[in-house]
Image (cartoon, rainbow, N blue to C red):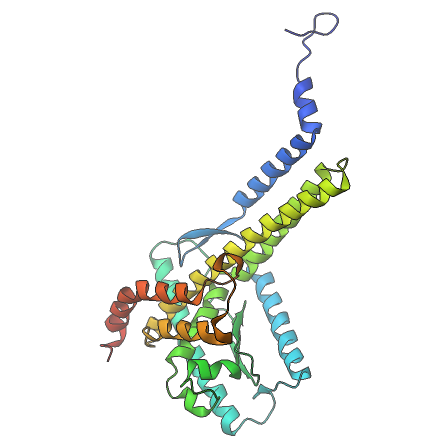
Length: 323
């Protein structure tokens, strides 16, 4: 056994050198990030998984409200009207807005019901649907888009109404005759807010930034070209991980949206056809699924077909036979 003068044990030197080494710094950072990740896990009752979430609901809702106002103001500054945002609201603008708000009211009631059911089943989480400041606006824009920010702040762009409507290449009130596909889109977006996907992404990005700093600190004496190569590899790996999480969020929001759809008595069979249409936008040209933030439209349509027997059974139990 190695000793110092006087016969005292000289242990621990190897461990000290290890902790001071490049590998030691990375090991300490990895352990710290792992513990931080595990200590900040919260349940997602809609799917049964756990998520990293370090953002309080109050912070999340405040950020959602701020972002909502910024986005709507930006749209107006670019010449895209926010319908019925002023004192006057009539004609086509009033009909579009009323339809979106009616769909939203049914979906938000379904969200409250779904959260209550999950609480009754014993899931431990903080429900939000009953306390959200549900707000709905229609944006006059050719962009096929819709979103729901934390807090229940919803916007539907007129550019998506033909895709969810009669699909004849133009937007008109005729697109509102059958609202089921629009309800699919809105239910999906509300699903993101209920599952706190925005807060989860923010929390994940914070962890990635800390990891990047740790990698940078551990290679301070390396050749600059090696440093660039390692940082680039770390960035690619981190981006790949974020893309995977993003696709999982989309699939989770699809399923939550479907659960809301049947509770609001909208026809769930419209969902697969909607995603087939979405896949045709831009001539169907898409990057490979593993390089995308969203699952392929074909994958999403297939998921809905897989979930459809259960969705139809639940719809008919609640709403009566489907025609």
